[in-house]
Length: 483
Image (cartoon, rainbow, N blue to C red):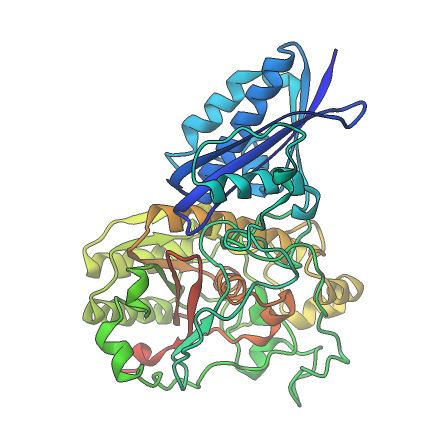
């Protein structure tokens, strides 16, 4: 049986925006390029463009030999995982494309592999050529023009997210601007080599420095062998017990207001009205549970505690604060009990339904669930040290690494950005998802997770703009919780 390799890619300059795909079919035995295809798609999302590239590649392979087997290689973790059956396909625009792709060859003759973007340059160049041309094209294998084009506007390479488009930061905890292409499809920097953490364009596979006991960035008096809750970080979950945190938020004070001009023109929680209304995620960490004051690991693999009386009161105060603001148009929650309960209290006050998104669940901390940081240090010292030093290391007993968490959260983010374009959505979730969304939007390395503080029932926000950039509010506002 003949075997083909299909390499495919797609991109959208704006997400949604002008989009195109590229696909190439190779002979698996010789590596020879057999055929190529590229097409301008008009205005669609990045993920739709990637699926269209996959479909074109499979069809091109089928035209060459319908009896062949095919090995698909793509730098889209989302497409690879969904087509492999490991992730659900929820977006209505992608379901029919995935079904059509599955129908080209019998499923047992197609396999899928994620590859880093730098290994997918051929299809990437074709997609760029299609977007540059702005019209359907079919490039012959010998066309030298295929080598031209950089998809900088859609998926730039490099170890960090490109900065510089949104530089007007608000003082004293206002909007911290970042030119991270955080909407749509991008890489997550060093979080995980096989990752499609796609804020619309971001880094791939460069491993940043990681915090250790000798890390000079660790604040004085905050030893890496201390749980973060001991010096003010939110307890009980993920990074809440991470060491070496240097607080980046005010201590309970309301953030300073945005400059007058920004307040006058900004839609909802964000700025830059010239780009239109962004998809804005208002990030709410759930209220306290009985484990929170005990400073215990509480992820998605543990006892799934409900809110305490204090946590329910926090949720009620959040609800009143959001009702006064009046900008939230939808509520989406993690499936865990504490987030669903928090979301239900808030949504009832806002007269909105609650949608559950599995991708927003907390990290699974394996055998550490229910333990304090000190207990983990005593029982599993080597595992803990490895986990603190490397985002790809899982907790004892399996669990989930921060890199795996980032991949999952980025995929959920992409679907939510596409589903709620131009709207303000309350995401009721946990410490790790919120910190990860902020990290990805800023293009920050995984080590930055250890330098954020996140209080129970606090609010932050990330706005995803039509040009693919993101604006992050880091005020960690808890003023709504005070009587």
